[in-house]
Structure formats: structure tokens, C-alpha cells
Amino acid sequence: MNFKRVLFIVIAIFLLAGCSTKEDPASDDSKPKDQAVIKNTDVKNEPSNEFPLTGIATEAGSERRAAAVMINNHPEARPQSGLSEADMVYEMLAEGDITRFLAIFQSEMPSQIGPIRSARDYYIELAKGLDCIYVCHGNSPEAKPCWTKGILIT
Image 1 (cartoon, rainbow, N blue to C red):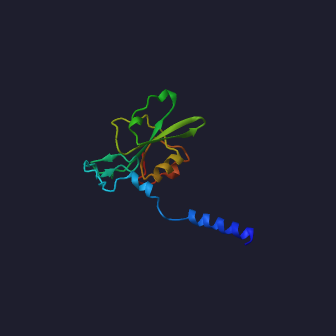
Image 2: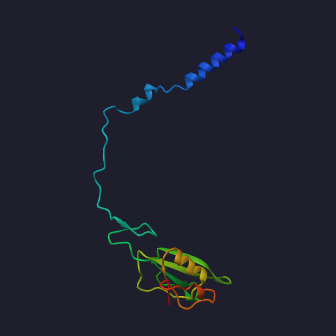
């Protein structure tokens, strides 16, 4: 026989033996064969509703529409009220290097929020995208055309 043919046959045998689907019996020894499946029967009655913006579970309904509130972030306006109870807070530039917050409230509604500031068109668009009621005091010239019924409360 030719040496190349013998080498080819030996390599083919090793490759085919390595592709075998036969299980190693030693690997099954680690698990007892009579092991019972244990189910968790300690299930608590967890709330079936959750707020969509945070995923926080609630017993009450979570259908309340979110409110997006413009909040001042000027150093002289601090400390703000209600930010710690917001589901989400966006901080974006309003003009120059001054930023404003858009605080989204749904799961909690604080008794006091503020100081409330004027609308900007891109904040209105963000609130629309989240289907929020938009709360502000005043507006920039660019924001005025963005007002639509049911979206802006001043």
C-alpha cells in the first residue's frame, strides 16, 4: 500500500471516531438517577401590574398617563422639588450652557414639583414620543408651533 493512502485512512478513522455521538458513561455518574425535580411552591402573590417606564410592580392599575414637567436647573433655582420621585429625568441644553430637566412622573406624583420653566421644541417632541402630558410655564419661539391640543398645559 502507498504511504499516503495509509496515512489518509488513519486520519479518517481518528476524525470519524472524534465525531461520535456516543455519551461518556462517566459523565452521568455525577447526577443520581433517582433525583426528583423540586418545584418552588413558595410563590408569593406578586402584583400583576407594572409601570411601563420603570417596570416597578404595583397593585393598583398602571394606566395613568405620564406627566412631563420642565424643571429649571439654574444654580440659583436649586434645590428643585420632586426630581427624586420622577420615573425618568432628562437633562438637555436649553440655551448656551444652561440645561433644563424634563422630569417624567407616572409611578409617583409628588405634592410639589419645580421650579417649572418654559417649553423648548425638542422637549415637547420628547414628551410626545412618551405620550406624556407636557407641563411648562411659557415657551421659546421655536416651541410655540409644536403646541397641540392635549399635549401642552401651561
